[in-house]
Length: 239
Length: 239
Image 1: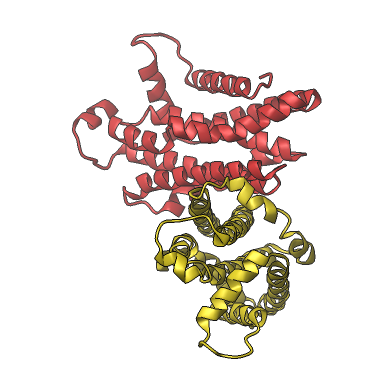
Image 2: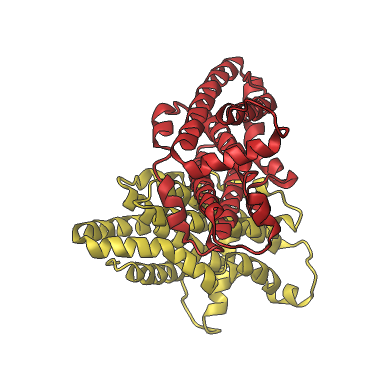
């Protein structure tokens, strides 16, 4: 059905618009929170270089969020209404991952935002082609963005290389944060039929036609875990 | 001398380059800190609308900071070296103005950043014309920026209108913050001859030729106080 719609051209209201709005609202809210987390860490950065770099990463997250919200408002939705349903979505996650140091807070941002971004990109692959392109352009990671995001990654990697105790503590913390992030992803898919529909469609397109027994949630979690492992590798932390 | 240089065209190294570098470094560092303060307040905003608005104000402060640093780096300076001398410039100010609530923290950002921005714009008027134009473009406030900055102002105004006790507490707090801000401005002029030179030149241009007995520091403080009063008026707070 989505294939059909994407081939018929210009936007028409339909079942998929609800899914697009949900995805934009979720991603927009999570990026707003990530912005706040990274910016707050810029304040407490160990040196001026780190402060400036983290401020830039935060600024880039905010610009991406604004582009994403623009995709939603282009369809007539109000940006606050888009995000409102997800206002408390991070509360249980935050309660279960109280960072006990600046480094833990920074890693929480990198890991949590990483998983959330991967989830949103994955779900975007379930949108009709034209919407997928619009959302993908806003939340897709270009090389330039990757370089910016890596400022946080590089900070963690350098600190971990210089301090083995910190490295093992952060590795442990990363596992806890990713565990809670994956729980959150599962909860979202269970509670939000529109998002679950996007995941199903993304899985359908990813797998061979007729491939039997695909558990959509398991597929999503394995994709997110694989990306998380790569991210921890880049930071020199055991996943 | 500065007039002469601005009329001779392209940039040549000179006494004023030190002043430009100092002004860019000071303004850049203060904006980095303001960014962090506003972004951190976006996290704790009373509602989603406030969070989004404050994030945007913070994002705009950061963009302005990056434009400003670019003016310095265009002259061959490294952006971190520009800011480094001012790394601890806000420490005594911060020690003397510990915000005891989210609102006090927000007002501290509005008032402190306001005074700092006014000081930098005033000092920029003492630069040779070409530098003044470059710096002015980066730290000058356009109508669009004013509208964004006013998001914080509007938040304070609404809260003060709705709660007389809060309004009188914030008015008191604003006086304390502006007092410390003016002390900081005086300290800077006393400790940084290059910045004091800009203030002298700005005062010279402002006043009538031959006008006697101009106390530069007193003139700077009176200009900053006048702008502060207008800012407090816009927030509906007694200055």
